[in-house]
Length: 248
Image (cartoon, rainbow, N blue to C red; front, top):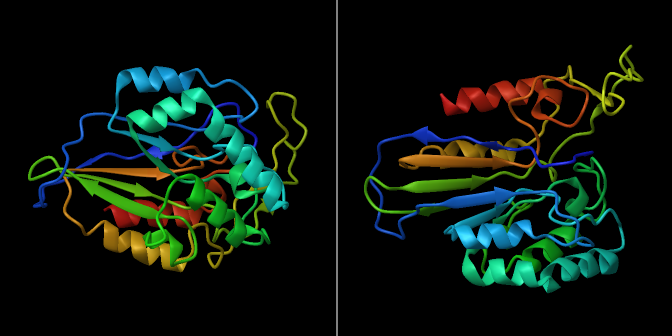
């Protein structure tokens, strides 16, 4: 995905519920699209705000490779940054991936190194060998914190592992200079195509049944935008509508 800054959804829903007592959450920070070869002073600013969590929303590095040695080296560059180390020491880090840290620009389920890339991702972000994410395809997960009346559920989606191929755009706006980039993709017309995959959809539906006062749902690609020719949920309009339906 071509991006200057990260675009995501964080959907907050006020819901009544009963939950066991856990750490109360006051502040959550999030961001995306960090080049491992550049300084990232924004991470020190985040650290100064002292959030309980920082959510990496994807393109956490720019890997863009099928060579897993190269991919790991790029993660190591991020991990060696003093500003990243300070953030890691100060707050809990949660993460999903987008295309460039997954492995290739705009890649989906056909990226051949996704299992190997996943292992490197989980190792870097500190998932234990017993982590749920070690035992199923993809890196989606959910986390819940807070007691009665303060229950926060954080749902992390995976928009890469299961996503079908994108439909190329061949319309009149392909080379329209009014757009920052040439338009690349058109909405899928087949309702058999998927963004999340059926297994992740079923998991998401079950997660939304869990009582929570606030839900935060994180996606690495644009959710609310209408079709704009770039990567977004709008390229799978039936999946976008299904998301609204499960929220209701």
